[in-house]
Amino acid sequence: MTKREENAIKTRNRLLKTAENMFKKNGFNELSVEEITKEAGVAKGTFYIYFRRKEDIVAEICRRYLKEIEEQIKELESKDIVEKLTLYNDKFIEAVELYGINICREWIKSAINPKTAFDNNDTSKWQYDFCMLRNILKTAAKSNELKENTPIELLTHLIISQLYGMMTCWCMSDGVFEPKDWTKKFCEVQLKAILNDFIKR
Image (cartoon, rainbow, N blue to C red; front, side, top):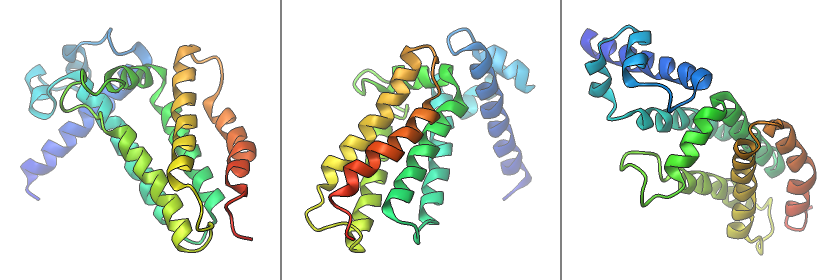
């Protein structure tokens, strides 16, 4: 990698981190690209070398953390299905809280209707999450941890609906509850109940 390429990566990451911190503190709509670049110490035009609009940064922030979750799941091959799904749920909601309610609201707004969202926004995130969860369940079925009649698709829909519902309710309530606390309760009570009939003893 050349020095120029290294500097480009550093500049892009600086813009991402600066924007993330400012979104959390000030909200999304209130901030301009000019304010972000000023805080990051770069020219306004530099922003458009890496991003087309502010919304692109929200999608990028979310993708980075989800990639980390995917890698952590791969390292849990020796754990049982409940532990893997509990980790996924925990890390997903941890990311939501880490982004803050302002970023979460903006992501929901931009991704809720794929037909009207910007072309390069992460409108396929639901599909990405769905596939990741389904793969966790499929792997457990292939390793004979789950019974042959396990309804993989149904279970995936139930779990992802809980996660997205928790995230949306948190935004709608203006953050009056801790999503991670409620997700923990879901994993301890409902998740185990959902899987109980399909886990091989």
